Image (cartoon, rainbow, N blue to C red; front, top):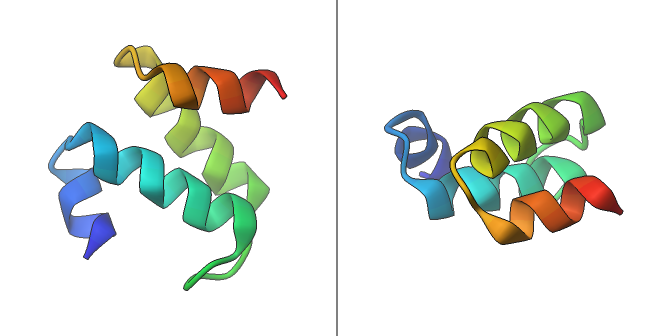
Length: 55
């Protein structure tokens, strides 16, 4: 569900997909994929994604 919306450039879904990869919730944990999605979302101005990249 989130992946479809994320692929359609819906920012909230992209961020949630990042968190899912980051924490391994509902999907296999994958830090590289999490960073890819965080960067995409952060580049679109999402403060939470920018913050998560900085921690």
